[in-house]
Image (cartoon, rainbow, N blue to C red; front, side, top):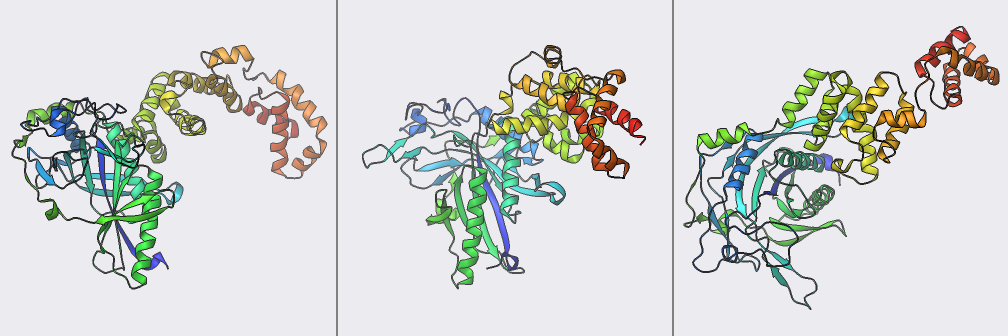
Length: 485
């Protein structure tokens, strides 16, 4: 089997749980982790005579998302009943939107891959609509029976549907990551995938070049980027093998098993007519006035794309640096806070430290940036001491370690307490160089014979002898004079 003879078509449907304090049609709490069924109001339980009331905060978050992706926010949209039976759906239908969603169109620019092979792609969005979540079926610790927890019933969701514009699992993951970052950036969803706040369904099909679109299968409820990639890769391979073996792909909903790395069929896939959509008679059309739109627009933060462009234009950062610094709102805030202290001239060094040493240490210790022991002010102070030649880059790493371990309030205190100030006085460095040259006659001979590596070795010996305190620039200059270079 060779994928080279096949085209892959992928679209994603993403459920982002809106971070409102109460549910979309009732006043019940949306807090995670409560005991089963203690946050289910009469509206959520669909008791006779109750009526839903729209949550204004949920609509505001939908507007915010629409503005962020350059979509059309409908001045008038309609709620519908999506009819199906499932044990954790008390009403026997879900309140959603069908023909007239609140957000229509829009685009999201993604960056796929790293290094020279990285490329950007624009993914079109079809729509985003408001709906309520269902409850949850529990299958453990019930003595062979299942339980129903209706705490999630009525939780506000924004279902975001892309066009089938992606052609690999890498593009799908890049899109999901960009969307995840965006909903957190505009503060409409906490993005907690472990708690189910951000879940992806992947529609995958394959076809030979030039043929019509193939039959798609939908992989449901993928709650990690790693599982999303694994599930899509397996599904692509499975569909190609089925077709090459002479079988037809049947439209279906499938689940991904992380333990086996395989997808398995859950049910045949329903079409829209199977749900018997019709306008919900209990809810009037949702009307969004121009004044409300303007109010939300004024409160919007600077978006990642605009901030990235500004970082390049105002501070001369590369597209790669700008993309890294705007990958999350937390990273962008950390950088801008540090930059405000260190000054514009230190933009590039700050970017290097944030995306280099700081990111590596956070990743190694599985910490979030919000939990970083090194604050923006402390990093700004460290970069300032490198810039004014108080310390070298190698010593700076020691200072960073000390800051990380809480050994001092700031870089200045650590440099003073540990005697790490860089030596720039030639009269102090020259005796060290003389000792190194006397102890390494072979390296001296090799350098004079044209071997540049020998010079680097001598520099390393001088830095070692000075315990890293000698100014590397001074060492290079004085060493070349001594060697007649």
